[in-house]
Image 1: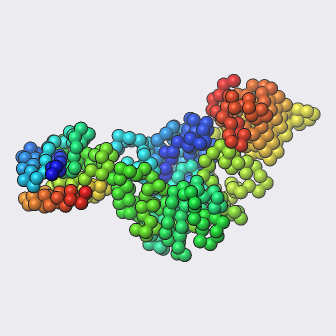
Image 2 (image 1 turned 135 degrees about the horizontal axis):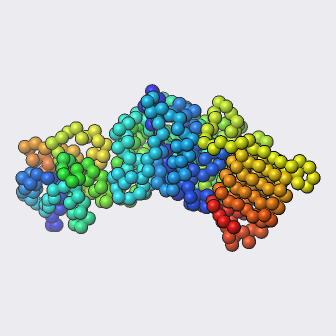
Image 3 (image 1 turned 120 degrees about the vertical axis):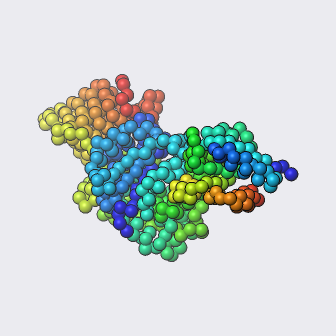
Length: 120
Length: 404
């Protein structure tokens, strides 16, 4: 079976490594980039089935990235994964398939990703 | 509902290609109409006559002329009191493209909705001529507790295929909607007419956001209210039709989506009738505009074959008709018609100069054109077609700044 491809957009390297390992255990192929500019470059050049998107990042933040990703790959599933619940008030975040708050329980993220990819 | 909870979005981003060459240098809402107006004066006047004063105008093509007109003519709002007209040119805030459709225009400016958080958004098109009290529609929307209400107008069944056509139940709930259908469905009350969408929508904020985001995520969508958003809401959301109530005080309801040179010419010619369909004289529903200050219109020479004669004509300020004949025409400000010339069934824009002995018939002359003496236009259409745009019905159009 072809592995589903996930892109993690996250500026904290330790978090990148953690999510990558956890998602690889679930059988996904995982790539990581550190900000929005790299994320857009990545999806333009590579196949990608789902993006996990942090909001606070240097160079280009998550919300701007979300808008740009959306207009480039309109039906690409996006999961916002952030420590900040208050950005839900920014209407563009409603375009994400899920808005998850970071905590120690990474199963939440894994299950959401599996749910979304099994629906597609 | 507090009026301040209602924000108006006027969509003025269309190219208006079918009105070429009047839209060669300006976006369609900025096309002059009725001597002194621009088309956008109608929705703007309707807005202020309805008591609504929070207005965003979205532009992208050739918007300079429109910007100027609004800045010079509509600088009447007080931001201190929460009133404004703000221009929003295409900014590539979200994507790297220009606006793909009307819904994309709203999506790309979603930040304005975040900022304003209005309860209701009234979406209008900047290129229609009509008189409407939007509050009547808003009250109906609130009474029905609708998610979205759309204004509808009745047209003969055989003309309906050019529009978005809807079908409603006895409560005016929309049960079917098709954009430009081959076989339009008739109105429930009268089989000879169809109910069409006027492109005027009221949305509750959360509904609008959800719908435009849902649509933005569809790659097959054209991101248009009429083609995509409204059809996607039928049968799912609480959506109603509002039967257009005309403030024009005439027997026939008036609404024109001036799409072509011929319909443009006809709508202007209507104004010079004894009893025009469009009533510009009603002080209860005034249409305001910007006009440069000129002296009053004047006619000179009163005897012999050099006698000035102006009949069935709208003559704007600054015009001088000198020893010539003007019949059944609309003249914008500062037009000169020199001796022995004849102008019939024509529309002359600002600063047009008609030389001596010219004969002009069924012609639209755009701004700043100087017609040399003894020129004939509109009499030999074959000849005219070689140099100018000539409409299906034979109206000649001389573009802006044309040099002889």
